[in-house]
Image (cartoon, rainbow, N blue to C red; front, top):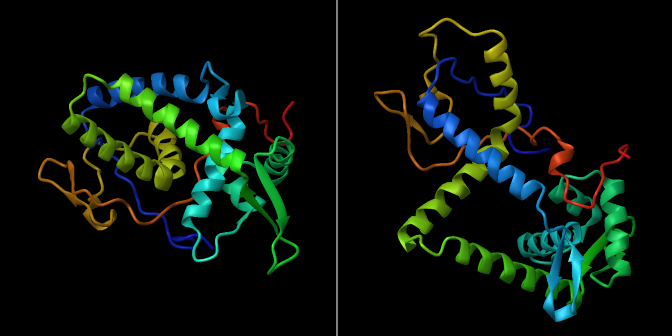
Length: 240
């Protein structure tokens, strides 16, 4: 059972916390980034060491296996179910993707020696090359894209993006549902909720703004599924 399961979800404020104009700017910026990231023009990644390109969906799966192996301790084993969860795919879609990857020599599948009913996945040397070189390409691209940024700005931006990512992962479903409810049934002015008792590790300042660097600790479940978030080249079960 995931952390926080079975516990009541914390109430959200009914009043605005931040400047609406700033929120609109952020909303537009995120929409522009989403178009570039979720539907990139490049759907394959050149891997110089292999002298060929690899589908982006398979690159993402290689990265998922690598990250899962890094997290597992002391005897890392990664199952099809683990990969499906990491990529937010259903089990059958992830399984078909891994079958294709095995045929290309990116991964090897075998039975778990502890539980024969469980299929484990590991990267081959070819899969490891995909992880290393695709990561190098991405970090070079980021470095060149932000060439004019100072080290201080880059470090602060990275910290905020990591913090934002953690917040999105833990609250997306709750806040989307709450936002729809707020727009459909706007509450009376001045009916905001004091967040101090509801957001662990956070304080509400005198002007209603949030302070503190601590991340929320009560996940509320996965984000709402959206076919637009599926890696390019992968279809969810039941789609065309």
